Image (cartoon, rainbow, N blue to C red):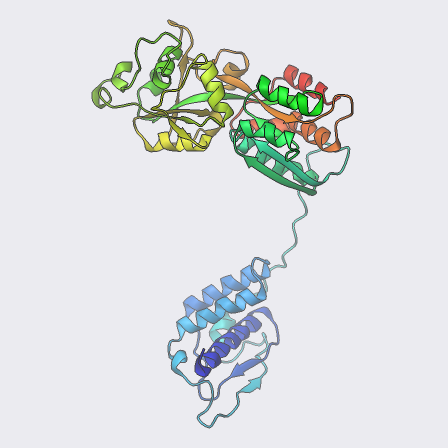
Length: 427
């Protein structure tokens, strides 16, 4: 930076300090160059400076940040200042004079700035901490880490649980990774996770590995009810008419174990006319690491195989994103990922019966065929009491606050009887 540029930068910064002093009541010295009087601020700049000062008073920005921003305003408002020398031709030093006091009104060139300060703003009072809901009363104060690795279907719920839970345990740090249900068991085996969120029950080979390592079985706690939705574009007629399980199988599966005579590859094969008649069905699903992949294969495809035409996605949200962007797309994902731009097609379980939409009632009473429990799996020796972390977090999750979080994220809370059964696993 040249000497000229350096001096001008100092000039702008000190002029900004003068503004800050004039508007905040400080007695900060102002540096004035005899050969170059400061330019009068414009009305627009006055309004911007007032906004900056308000942000500073509220603690949103620091004094240093306020000075920096106002220095930039000075430079942009007075282009001629950039070309002006920062000292007299003879090299005379700059004079330092005290800033004008906030009252009475300062003289020019700061009169327009002083006009902004018509009254002292009310003092900012720090907000009191939010009152915690007494329906969860910790028996122990937790510190350290809570680590969870597993289902990305449960990312929304787990993140919200942990956000609220740490309000009660401020010394606790959360580490969560949603990489798929199949990653939960290895993480628990290697001691890398305290909880393994899973969108399915552990499979027997997974339980066997756990038993071999620790000599007892993992504790699998049901914590919520989910339903897999069949996502289609809002303009798709099947969002109203629905799909049978046999049709779903013939769309997604190469084995068609539900009895379909042939693969359903166009929307016209489902009786949809117009532009849809010859349009291809673009199929989206999850990858093999996902518990959602396994559950859909077992329940919707009767343990058949997915067709090679199914475009696998790494996460539940990505499936919904693809369908949202593809008018002729279809995919499956948890109902918690439903949003504007997609619709859920109701499912016909039995021929001649009305199609059933996923809901809390249909998912918990068994009428919706693609409903499932969601789990938190943990390594708890049944011969010993649960750890403070296990007891506190699972008590919170199964309690009224944790179950309200489940519902707020678009999933379904456990019925009271199931909550009692799962809470008994903590004794």
